[in-house]
Image (cartoon, rainbow, N blue to C red; front, side, top):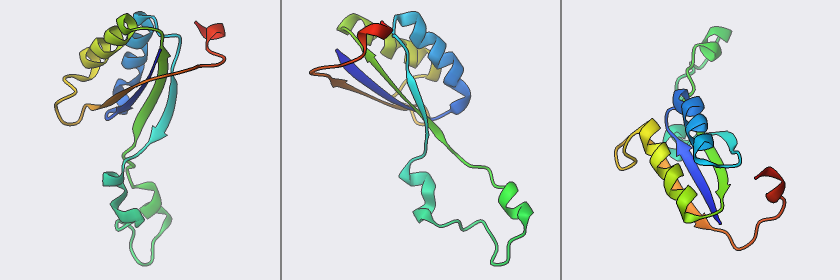
Length: 115
């Protein structure tokens, strides 16, 4: 079994990606809102004036990613998930697509009821 972690750069592609993953036979996925260090700008908001008004807070566009987790049973499903991911977001070696990590899992509890 493998744990797949994918950081999706473009949240607008989330629904298409989840549908593509479901077609590969994944049992489901967990989705988290996330952001990377590059987008945090050292933790300080440099876009708000010294004396802000409410409009200054509402006009800011936040740049978030989506981080997806799923567990797959074998290499066949893993290969399908990677291929489906690249069909939706493009070549993962290109910028602004995302980062996909695959980790082998020694044991998983509670998964069988979802597969």
